[in-house]
Image 1 (tube, rainbow, N blue to C red):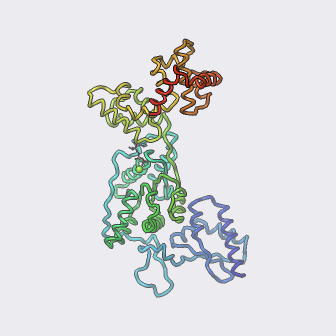
Image 2: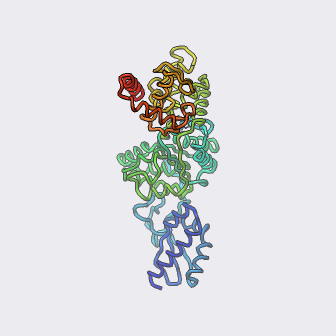
Image 3: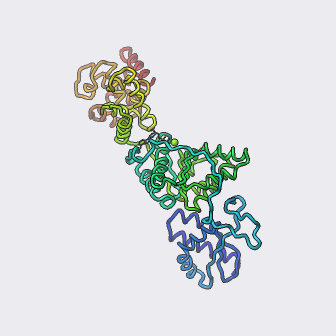
Length: 457
Ligand code: ADP
Ligand code: MG
Protein backbone atom coordinates (compact mmCIF):
# COMPACT_ATOMS: atom_id res chain seq x y z
CA UNK A 1 0.00 0.00 0.00
CA UNK A 2 1.33 3.48 -0.83
CA UNK A 3 2.02 6.14 1.79
CA UNK A 4 -0.95 8.08 0.53
CA UNK A 5 -3.22 5.11 0.96
CA UNK A 6 -1.98 4.64 4.52
CA UNK A 7 -2.57 8.28 5.24
CA UNK A 8 -6.09 8.20 3.97
CA UNK A 9 -6.71 5.01 5.93
CA UNK A 10 -5.57 6.84 9.07
CA UNK A 11 -7.79 9.81 8.17
CA UNK A 12 -10.78 7.51 7.85
CA UNK A 13 -9.98 5.79 11.10
CA UNK A 14 -9.63 9.11 12.86
CA UNK A 15 -12.98 10.32 11.54
CA UNK A 16 -14.63 7.08 12.59
CA UNK A 17 -13.22 7.47 16.07
CA UNK A 18 -14.23 11.10 16.39
CA UNK A 19 -17.73 10.26 15.16
CA UNK A 20 -18.10 7.56 17.79
CA UNK A 21 -16.96 9.42 20.85
CA UNK A 22 -17.93 12.82 22.01
CA UNK A 23 -15.30 13.82 24.50
CA UNK A 24 -13.08 16.91 24.33
CA UNK A 25 -10.40 15.08 26.29
CA UNK A 26 -10.25 12.33 23.73
CA UNK A 27 -10.46 14.77 20.84
CA UNK A 28 -7.29 16.42 22.11
CA UNK A 29 -5.51 13.09 22.33
CA UNK A 30 -6.64 12.11 18.88
CA UNK A 31 -5.04 15.36 17.76
CA UNK A 32 -1.85 14.25 19.44
CA UNK A 33 -1.82 10.92 17.61
CA UNK A 34 0.45 10.81 14.56
CA UNK A 35 0.86 8.30 11.82
CA UNK A 36 4.36 6.81 11.70
CA UNK A 37 6.07 4.98 8.84
CA UNK A 38 5.79 1.21 9.20
CA UNK A 39 5.57 -2.11 7.39
CA UNK A 40 2.60 -2.66 5.09
CA UNK A 41 0.72 -4.94 7.40
CA UNK A 42 0.78 -2.40 10.25
CA UNK A 43 -0.79 0.89 11.08
CA UNK A 44 1.65 2.51 13.47
CA UNK A 45 0.50 5.45 15.57
CA UNK A 46 2.59 7.51 17.94
CA UNK A 47 1.67 9.46 21.05
CA UNK A 48 3.72 12.10 22.86
CA UNK A 49 3.97 10.33 26.21
CA UNK A 50 3.74 6.83 27.55
CA UNK A 51 0.88 7.95 29.74
CA UNK A 52 -1.08 9.13 26.71
CA UNK A 53 -0.32 5.90 24.88
CA UNK A 54 -1.41 3.73 27.78
CA UNK A 55 -4.53 5.75 28.23
CA UNK A 56 -5.53 5.41 24.59
CA UNK A 57 -4.80 1.70 24.70
CA UNK A 58 -6.82 1.23 27.86
CA UNK A 59 -9.79 3.18 26.67
CA UNK A 60 -9.93 2.99 22.90
CA UNK A 61 -7.89 0.05 21.69
CA UNK A 62 -10.95 -2.15 21.15
CA UNK A 63 -12.82 0.53 19.31
CA UNK A 64 -9.82 1.29 17.11
CA UNK A 65 -9.29 -2.41 16.33
CA UNK A 66 -12.93 -2.77 15.49
CA UNK A 67 -12.97 0.20 13.12
CA UNK A 68 -9.70 -0.86 11.53
CA UNK A 69 -11.09 -4.31 10.83
CA UNK A 70 -13.87 -2.72 8.82
CA UNK A 71 -11.59 -0.35 6.92
CA UNK A 72 -8.51 -2.55 6.34
CA UNK A 73 -8.84 -6.08 7.73
CA UNK A 74 -5.30 -7.03 6.67
CA UNK A 75 -3.71 -4.46 8.98
CA UNK A 76 -2.71 -4.60 12.61
CA UNK A 77 -2.70 -1.60 14.87
CA UNK A 78 0.33 -0.68 16.95
CA UNK A 79 1.48 2.25 19.06
CA UNK A 80 4.75 3.85 20.02
CA UNK A 81 5.82 6.84 22.10
CA UNK A 82 7.36 9.32 19.72
CA UNK A 83 10.46 11.43 20.25
CA UNK A 84 9.46 14.53 22.08
CA UNK A 85 9.03 17.67 20.05
CA UNK A 86 11.97 19.88 21.13
CA UNK A 87 9.56 22.69 21.85
CA UNK A 88 7.54 20.58 24.21
CA UNK A 89 10.36 18.93 26.06
CA UNK A 90 9.66 18.47 29.70
CA UNK A 91 13.01 18.43 31.53
CA UNK A 92 11.54 16.26 34.26
CA UNK A 93 10.62 13.64 31.71
CA UNK A 94 13.91 13.62 29.91
CA UNK A 95 16.36 10.86 30.55
CA UNK A 96 19.43 12.27 32.27
CA UNK A 97 21.85 10.06 30.37
CA UNK A 98 21.97 9.65 26.65
CA UNK A 99 20.23 6.40 25.87
CA UNK A 100 22.29 3.82 24.08
CA UNK A 101 19.37 2.59 22.01
CA UNK A 102 16.24 4.32 20.83
CA UNK A 103 15.31 7.12 23.26
CA UNK A 104 12.69 5.98 25.68
CA UNK A 105 11.08 8.87 27.54
CA UNK A 106 10.67 8.27 31.25
CA UNK A 107 7.00 7.55 31.78
CA UNK A 108 5.23 10.50 33.30
CA UNK A 109 3.90 8.43 36.18
CA UNK A 110 7.42 7.57 37.31
CA UNK A 111 7.79 11.22 38.33
CA UNK A 112 9.54 11.81 41.65
CA UNK A 113 9.18 14.83 43.89
CA UNK A 114 12.11 17.13 43.26
CA UNK A 115 14.08 18.42 46.22
CA UNK A 116 14.23 22.13 47.18
CA UNK A 117 10.84 23.18 46.07
CA UNK A 118 10.69 26.71 47.38
CA UNK A 119 8.04 28.69 45.61
CA UNK A 120 6.30 31.20 47.88
CA UNK A 121 2.81 29.97 48.40
CA UNK A 122 0.14 32.60 47.92
CA UNK A 123 -2.23 32.17 50.85
CA UNK A 124 -5.89 31.55 50.19
CA UNK A 125 -8.34 34.15 51.44
CA UNK A 126 -10.10 32.44 54.37
CA UNK A 127 -13.40 34.10 53.38
CA UNK A 128 -13.46 32.52 49.93
CA UNK A 129 -15.11 29.19 50.67
CA UNK A 130 -18.05 27.33 49.20
CA UNK A 131 -20.05 28.09 52.36
CA UNK A 132 -19.82 31.83 51.77
CA UNK A 133 -20.48 31.57 48.04
CA UNK A 134 -24.13 32.33 47.29
CA UNK A 135 -25.55 30.28 44.46
CA UNK A 136 -28.12 31.38 41.91
CA UNK A 137 -28.87 30.62 38.30
CA UNK A 138 -26.13 33.03 37.21
CA UNK A 139 -23.40 30.91 38.78
CA UNK A 140 -24.94 27.51 39.39
CA UNK A 141 -23.07 25.49 36.79
CA UNK A 142 -19.74 27.07 37.70
CA UNK A 143 -20.34 26.35 41.38
CA UNK A 144 -21.38 22.73 40.75
CA UNK A 145 -18.39 22.09 38.52
CA UNK A 146 -16.05 23.62 41.09
CA UNK A 147 -17.45 21.41 43.82
CA UNK A 148 -17.12 18.34 41.61
CA UNK A 149 -13.50 19.23 40.90
CA UNK A 150 -12.81 19.79 44.60
CA UNK A 151 -14.34 16.43 45.46
CA UNK A 152 -12.23 14.54 42.93
CA UNK A 153 -9.26 16.61 41.83
CA UNK A 154 -7.79 15.47 38.55
CA UNK A 155 -10.68 13.20 37.77
CA UNK A 156 -13.82 15.23 37.20
CA UNK A 157 -12.84 17.95 34.73
CA UNK A 158 -9.27 18.78 33.92
CA UNK A 159 -8.65 21.60 33.39
CA UNK A 160 -11.58 23.50 34.85
CA UNK A 161 -11.74 26.86 33.10
CA UNK A 162 -13.87 29.50 34.83
CA UNK A 163 -14.56 32.73 32.98
CA UNK A 164 -16.59 35.85 33.66
CA UNK A 165 -16.30 39.61 33.98
CA UNK A 166 -14.40 41.25 36.77
CA UNK A 167 -15.99 41.14 40.21
CA UNK A 168 -18.28 38.18 39.57
CA UNK A 169 -16.64 35.69 41.93
CA UNK A 170 -13.99 33.84 39.88
CA UNK A 171 -11.26 34.16 42.49
CA UNK A 172 -13.69 33.33 45.28
CA UNK A 173 -14.87 30.17 43.55
CA UNK A 174 -11.47 28.78 42.59
CA UNK A 175 -10.02 29.50 46.03
CA UNK A 176 -12.99 27.63 47.47
CA UNK A 177 -11.75 24.62 45.52
CA UNK A 178 -8.37 25.06 47.20
CA UNK A 179 -9.90 25.24 50.69
CA UNK A 180 -12.02 22.19 50.08
CA UNK A 181 -9.16 20.08 48.73
CA UNK A 182 -7.02 21.09 51.69
CA UNK A 183 -9.79 20.21 54.10
CA UNK A 184 -10.10 16.73 52.60
CA UNK A 185 -6.39 16.22 52.49
CA UNK A 186 -4.31 18.59 54.62
CA UNK A 187 -1.10 17.32 53.01
CA UNK A 188 -2.29 18.10 49.47
CA UNK A 189 0.20 20.22 47.53
CA UNK A 190 -1.85 23.19 46.40
CA UNK A 191 -0.65 26.25 44.57
CA UNK A 192 -2.82 29.28 43.97
CA UNK A 193 -1.02 31.82 41.80
CA UNK A 194 -2.24 34.87 39.99
CA UNK A 195 -0.98 35.01 36.45
CA UNK A 196 1.03 38.04 37.43
CA UNK A 197 2.81 35.99 40.08
CA UNK A 198 3.38 33.18 37.62
CA UNK A 199 4.90 35.61 35.14
CA UNK A 200 7.13 37.03 37.89
CA UNK A 201 8.24 33.57 38.94
CA UNK A 202 9.24 32.78 35.37
CA UNK A 203 10.96 36.10 34.79
CA UNK A 204 12.93 35.82 38.04
CA UNK A 205 13.64 32.16 37.39
CA UNK A 206 15.25 33.13 34.14
CA UNK A 207 17.06 36.14 35.58
CA UNK A 208 18.54 34.30 38.56
CA UNK A 209 19.13 31.09 36.66
CA UNK A 210 16.89 29.03 38.86
CA UNK A 211 14.27 28.13 36.30
CA UNK A 212 14.67 24.46 37.12
CA UNK A 213 13.53 25.05 40.69
CA UNK A 214 10.58 27.16 39.56
CA UNK A 215 9.56 24.54 37.04
CA UNK A 216 9.90 21.81 39.62
CA UNK A 217 7.81 23.75 42.11
CA UNK A 218 4.97 24.21 39.66
CA UNK A 219 5.08 20.62 38.53
CA UNK A 220 4.99 19.45 42.10
CA UNK A 221 1.43 20.69 42.60
CA UNK A 222 -1.47 18.34 42.90
CA UNK A 223 -3.80 21.27 42.44
CA UNK A 224 -2.59 24.28 40.49
CA UNK A 225 -4.87 27.30 40.33
CA UNK A 226 -3.90 30.04 37.90
CA UNK A 227 -6.03 33.16 38.28
CA UNK A 228 -6.69 35.64 35.45
CA UNK A 229 -4.82 33.77 32.76
CA UNK A 230 -5.71 36.45 30.18
CA UNK A 231 -2.68 38.38 31.48
CA UNK A 232 -0.36 35.81 29.94
CA UNK A 233 -1.34 37.10 26.50
CA UNK A 234 1.61 38.20 24.42
CA UNK A 235 4.20 36.81 26.88
CA UNK A 236 5.76 34.09 24.81
CA UNK A 237 8.32 32.63 27.19
CA UNK A 238 5.73 32.42 29.93
CA UNK A 239 3.24 30.75 27.62
CA UNK A 240 5.80 28.15 26.73
CA UNK A 241 6.55 27.47 30.39
CA UNK A 242 2.89 27.28 31.18
CA UNK A 243 2.28 24.92 28.30
CA UNK A 244 4.95 22.54 29.53
CA UNK A 245 3.74 22.79 33.13
CA UNK A 246 0.22 22.14 31.97
CA UNK A 247 1.24 19.02 30.07
CA UNK A 248 3.30 17.71 32.93
CA UNK A 249 0.49 18.14 35.44
CA UNK A 250 -2.16 16.83 33.09
CA UNK A 251 -0.15 13.73 32.37
CA UNK A 252 0.10 13.11 36.09
CA UNK A 253 -3.66 13.64 36.34
CA UNK A 254 -3.09 16.52 38.68
CA UNK A 255 -5.81 19.13 38.72
CA UNK A 256 -5.47 22.43 36.90
CA UNK A 257 -7.94 25.26 37.48
CA UNK A 258 -7.82 28.41 35.41
CA UNK A 259 -9.79 31.64 35.47
CA UNK A 260 -10.06 34.29 32.82
CA UNK A 261 -12.24 37.24 31.93
CA UNK A 262 -12.62 35.83 28.43
CA UNK A 263 -13.16 32.52 26.68
CA UNK A 264 -9.92 30.84 25.55
CA UNK A 265 -10.70 31.66 21.93
CA UNK A 266 -11.25 35.31 22.74
CA UNK A 267 -7.87 35.83 24.41
CA UNK A 268 -5.71 37.66 21.91
CA UNK A 269 -2.04 36.77 21.53
CA UNK A 270 -2.46 33.40 23.17
CA UNK A 271 -0.83 30.42 21.49
CA UNK A 272 -3.27 28.08 19.79
CA UNK A 273 -1.89 25.07 21.59
CA UNK A 274 -2.72 26.69 24.94
CA UNK A 275 -6.19 27.62 23.72
CA UNK A 276 -6.73 24.04 22.74
CA UNK A 277 -5.44 22.72 26.10
CA UNK A 278 -7.82 25.06 27.92
CA UNK A 279 -10.69 23.41 26.12
CA UNK A 280 -9.79 19.88 27.09
CA UNK A 281 -11.78 19.84 30.27
CA UNK A 282 -14.80 21.92 31.14
CA UNK A 283 -15.46 25.60 30.56
CA UNK A 284 -17.97 27.31 32.84
CA UNK A 285 -19.05 30.92 33.08
CA UNK A 286 -20.13 33.35 35.76
CA UNK A 287 -22.87 35.79 34.80
CA UNK A 288 -23.97 38.90 36.71
CA UNK A 289 -26.24 37.70 39.51
CA UNK A 290 -29.96 38.30 39.29
CA UNK A 291 -31.74 40.48 41.87
CA UNK A 292 -32.57 37.69 44.37
CA UNK A 293 -28.98 36.49 44.37
CA UNK A 294 -27.70 40.04 44.83
CA UNK A 295 -29.96 40.44 47.85
CA UNK A 296 -28.85 37.08 49.23
CA UNK A 297 -25.18 38.01 48.78
CA UNK A 298 -25.74 41.28 50.68
CA UNK A 299 -27.58 39.52 53.49
CA UNK A 300 -24.92 36.86 53.80
CA UNK A 301 -22.16 39.42 53.87
CA UNK A 302 -24.05 41.53 56.42
CA UNK A 303 -24.53 38.51 58.64
CA UNK A 304 -20.86 37.51 58.44
CA UNK A 305 -19.72 41.03 59.24
CA UNK A 306 -22.35 41.58 61.93
CA UNK A 307 -24.10 44.42 60.08
CA UNK A 308 -27.79 45.02 60.83
CA UNK A 309 -29.15 45.37 57.31
CA UNK A 310 -32.84 46.16 56.94
CA UNK A 311 -34.63 44.55 53.99
CA UNK A 312 -35.46 47.81 52.23
CA UNK A 313 -31.82 48.89 52.31
CA UNK A 314 -30.70 45.53 50.91
CA UNK A 315 -33.21 46.00 48.12
CA UNK A 316 -32.06 49.56 47.42
CA UNK A 317 -28.42 48.48 47.10
CA UNK A 318 -29.24 45.34 45.14
CA UNK A 319 -31.36 47.31 42.69
CA UNK A 320 -28.69 49.92 42.15
CA UNK A 321 -25.57 47.81 41.75
CA UNK A 322 -26.17 45.14 39.18
CA UNK A 323 -23.16 43.95 37.35
CA UNK A 324 -20.34 43.62 39.87
CA UNK A 325 -20.46 41.76 43.17
CA UNK A 326 -17.37 43.52 44.46
CA UNK A 327 -19.11 46.90 44.05
CA UNK A 328 -22.22 45.45 45.60
CA UNK A 329 -20.25 44.50 48.70
CA UNK A 330 -18.44 47.84 48.57
CA UNK A 331 -21.74 49.69 48.76
CA UNK A 332 -22.74 47.71 51.83
CA UNK A 333 -19.44 48.37 53.55
CA UNK A 334 -19.65 52.05 52.76
CA UNK A 335 -23.15 52.27 54.17
CA UNK A 336 -22.12 50.45 57.29
CA UNK A 337 -19.05 52.64 57.82
CA UNK A 338 -21.16 55.76 57.25
CA UNK A 339 -23.65 54.59 59.89
CA UNK A 340 -21.04 53.84 62.50
CA UNK A 341 -19.23 57.14 61.94
CA UNK A 342 -22.47 59.01 62.51
CA UNK A 343 -23.53 56.59 65.21
CA UNK A 344 -26.86 56.03 63.52
CA UNK A 345 -28.60 52.80 62.56
CA UNK A 346 -28.72 51.80 58.90
CA UNK A 347 -31.94 53.09 57.39
CA UNK A 348 -33.09 53.76 53.86
CA UNK A 349 -32.42 57.48 54.21
CA UNK A 350 -28.99 56.93 55.67
CA UNK A 351 -28.11 54.49 52.88
CA UNK A 352 -29.20 56.98 50.24
CA UNK A 353 -27.02 59.60 51.85
CA UNK A 354 -24.07 57.24 52.20
CA UNK A 355 -24.30 56.10 48.64
CA UNK A 356 -24.97 59.46 47.07
CA UNK A 357 -23.18 59.68 43.79
CA UNK A 358 -22.60 55.94 43.72
CA UNK A 359 -26.13 54.75 43.35
CA UNK A 360 -27.85 57.87 42.15
CA UNK A 361 -26.25 57.81 38.74
CA UNK A 362 -27.47 54.33 38.28
CA UNK A 363 -30.90 54.79 39.80
CA UNK A 364 -31.60 57.80 37.65
CA UNK A 365 -30.86 56.02 34.48
CA UNK A 366 -33.71 53.58 34.87
CA UNK A 367 -37.37 54.34 34.13
CA UNK A 368 -38.05 54.02 37.84
CA UNK A 369 -35.25 56.47 38.63
CA UNK A 370 -36.49 59.01 36.11
CA UNK A 371 -39.97 58.71 37.48
CA UNK A 372 -38.77 59.38 41.03
CA UNK A 373 -36.66 62.32 40.00
CA UNK A 374 -39.52 63.90 38.06
CA UNK A 375 -41.93 63.41 40.96
CA UNK A 376 -39.41 65.02 43.28
CA UNK A 377 -38.83 67.95 40.93
CA UNK A 378 -42.53 68.78 40.50
CA UNK A 379 -43.22 67.99 44.15
CA UNK A 380 -45.83 65.33 43.44
CA UNK A 381 -45.95 61.75 44.69
CA UNK A 382 -44.63 58.84 42.64
CA UNK A 383 -47.94 57.12 43.34
CA UNK A 384 -49.75 60.09 41.76
CA UNK A 385 -47.73 59.77 38.57
CA UNK A 386 -48.47 56.07 38.49
CA UNK A 387 -52.11 56.70 39.35
CA UNK A 388 -55.05 57.86 37.23
CA UNK A 389 -55.44 61.40 38.60
CA UNK A 390 -55.86 64.07 35.89
CA UNK A 391 -55.15 67.34 37.67
CA UNK A 392 -53.05 69.63 35.54
CA UNK A 393 -49.84 69.39 37.56
CA UNK A 394 -49.93 65.61 37.94
CA UNK A 395 -50.81 65.01 34.34
CA UNK A 396 -47.99 67.34 33.23
CA UNK A 397 -45.42 65.62 35.47
CA UNK A 398 -46.57 62.23 34.18
CA UNK A 399 -46.15 63.31 30.55
CA UNK A 400 -42.70 64.76 31.22
CA UNK A 401 -41.62 61.58 32.96
CA UNK A 402 -42.80 59.44 30.03
CA UNK A 403 -41.15 61.77 27.55
CA UNK A 404 -37.80 61.66 29.39
CA UNK A 405 -37.88 57.87 29.61
CA UNK A 406 -38.29 57.80 25.85
CA UNK A 407 -35.67 60.48 25.16
CA UNK A 408 -32.99 59.39 27.61
CA UNK A 409 -33.44 55.65 27.68
CA UNK A 410 -35.09 54.92 24.32
CA UNK A 411 -37.37 52.56 26.20
CA UNK A 412 -40.21 50.94 24.25
CA UNK A 413 -43.57 52.74 24.74
CA UNK A 414 -45.05 49.58 26.18
CA UNK A 415 -42.38 49.28 28.89
CA UNK A 416 -42.75 52.97 29.75
CA UNK A 417 -46.50 52.49 30.11
CA UNK A 418 -46.00 49.52 32.38
CA UNK A 419 -43.69 51.32 34.75
CA UNK A 420 -46.05 54.33 34.90
CA UNK A 421 -48.74 52.33 36.63
CA UNK A 422 -49.74 50.07 33.78
CA UNK A 423 -50.76 52.67 31.21
CA UNK A 424 -51.54 51.71 27.65
CA UNK A 425 -48.78 52.33 25.10
CA UNK A 426 -51.06 54.68 23.12
CA UNK A 427 -51.33 56.87 26.23
CA UNK A 428 -47.53 57.03 26.33
CA UNK A 429 -47.31 57.94 22.64
CA UNK A 430 -49.84 60.75 23.07
CA UNK A 431 -48.00 62.11 26.13
CA UNK A 432 -44.62 62.03 24.39
CA UNK A 433 -46.04 63.81 21.33
CA UNK A 434 -47.60 66.49 23.48
CA UNK A 435 -44.31 67.28 25.22
CA UNK A 436 -42.35 66.99 21.97
CA UNK A 437 -44.56 69.66 20.41
CA UNK A 438 -44.12 72.05 23.33
CA UNK A 439 -40.53 71.30 24.25
CA UNK A 440 -39.25 74.76 23.25
CA UNK A 441 -42.04 76.66 24.95
CA UNK A 442 -40.93 78.93 27.78
CA UNK A 443 -43.10 77.11 30.30
CA UNK A 444 -41.70 73.67 29.33
CA UNK A 445 -38.12 74.07 28.12
CA UNK A 446 -36.51 75.13 31.45
CA UNK A 447 -38.03 72.12 33.23
CA UNK A 448 -36.82 69.67 30.64
CA UNK A 449 -33.41 71.24 30.65
CA UNK A 450 -33.06 71.17 34.42
CA UNK A 451 -34.32 67.61 34.74
CA UNK A 452 -32.11 66.33 31.95
CA UNK A 453 -29.10 67.95 33.53
CA UNK A 454 -29.78 66.35 36.92
CA UNK A 455 -30.52 62.99 35.42
CA UNK A 456 -27.53 62.75 33.16
CA UNK A 457 -25.12 64.39 35.59
P1 ADP B 1 -13.40 38.11 40.28
O1 ADP B 1 -12.24 37.26 40.64
O2 ADP B 1 -14.32 37.47 39.30
O3 ADP B 1 -13.02 39.50 39.84
P2 ADP B 1 -13.95 37.93 43.09
O4 ADP B 1 -13.92 36.46 43.27
O5 ADP B 1 -12.78 38.71 43.54
O6 ADP B 1 -14.29 38.29 41.57
O7 ADP B 1 -15.28 38.48 43.78
C1 ADP B 1 -15.45 39.82 44.17
C2 ADP B 1 -16.12 39.86 45.52
O8 ADP B 1 -17.46 39.42 45.41
C3 ADP B 1 -15.46 38.95 46.53
O9 ADP B 1 -15.44 39.59 47.78
C4 ADP B 1 -16.37 37.74 46.58
O10 ADP B 1 -16.36 37.13 47.85
C5 ADP B 1 -17.71 38.33 46.26
N1 ADP B 1 -18.60 37.39 45.56
C6 ADP B 1 -18.69 37.20 44.23
N2 ADP B 1 -19.63 36.31 43.92
C7 ADP B 1 -20.15 35.90 45.10
C8 ADP B 1 -21.19 34.97 45.45
N3 ADP B 1 -21.86 34.29 44.52
N4 ADP B 1 -21.46 34.82 46.75
C9 ADP B 1 -20.80 35.52 47.70
N5 ADP B 1 -19.84 36.40 47.44
C10 ADP B 1 -19.51 36.60 46.15
MG1 MG C 1 -10.23 37.67 40.53
